[in-house]
Image 1 (cartoon, rainbow, N blue to C red):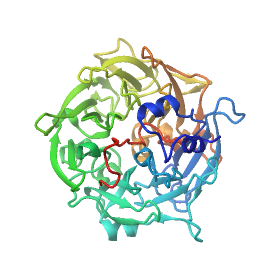
Image 2 (spheres, rainbow, N blue to C red; image 1 turned 90 degrees about the vertical axis):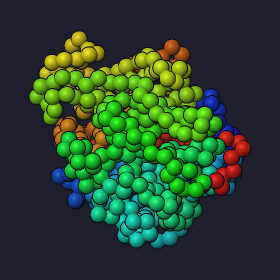
Image 3 (cartoon, rainbow, N blue to C red; image 1 turned 90 degrees about the horizontal axis):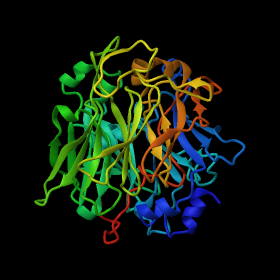
Length: 493
């Protein structure tokens, strides 16, 4: 029985009744979908593609790419993905998680992929028409005035919402595109007025709130990272609090110099929670946000990753660069990756204001021994980490995107961030490709161990190396699914 079949058999609509139900009874992942990005030297002649990777230890094709779905256009820069339906519409038996939504950050195009017909071999959706379904750049411009689509979340109404980071010219502009969940056409802009920056978002209808984060101007980040762009105000440092029903921003929380470039945001999975966490990339901090008794939202730094004094690098102070964070479905652990330093961390967040480090794995990075970078001052380590090998191959780049299994026992890790940033900080990812790893997690006491028998090397792809990005499971995961409290009507947008 496939993931989706098992999911459908045990409940009315897609997903699970609660986060704990997903954690206890969710099927073990056997397949994962990952977008693969073509390096700059080939991007104008070869399209990006979506791979299916077999992660079933009992399968003869374990740790193998078993299918590749090539996009019909070039230079898209596939990035994150999301579903047409998830646990937010669990009570609607007419809905099914059978379409993967693939926004393209550089081309501004959005693809719709049919995963329901054959999970192992997804295809571009046609909805029984002669041509595949996609939202084209001109539609984004004419109907919404937006570009650089990023995060996809399915809504309880059955619609799909995608955050955007720019205007048609590539200047910074935050907003959201609302897409019909059946026809996959743009309905309208979600917000009444656009804001300064966009990136990720998470909603909690029970409390009539959504909070969004800020990366930067597409013109800035598409060309790689320039520290001067931070000084020029081309990158964000705020959390944006929205009235979920009115579609209006009601508060902007400035995180200051310690909250530069807040990226991935996660409310607690508990749909009645009024708090969560956000990872701030450049300042390498994790902030906790919460609603105060007077109804005003606030944020405080709860985890700080010290910069390292270095030589032979772009800057004298090297940040960890927190690029992805996840919460386990029981809201006990938070995980995040330090892409530049090269480690993944696990914190026990039972005490929300005082996370406790319980696990750490080094997986490449810029400070490993034998590289060009020399660390001259380190507040955490006494010596530079050793290079890491898996199945005889050197780990390239640093840990970036992470995805946790429903039961919390396996963490999947890829190493590509964004093609221009990969080329700048880890050029070996461009020439040799990125990799997929698996980390075993102790869910009782905390702790993580790299699985030395699991590796998918995207340097071995048939047409040459590619950069693999975000991991998705056919049955949903802890960053794709949002749960609604039972008293919340599904039509509250």
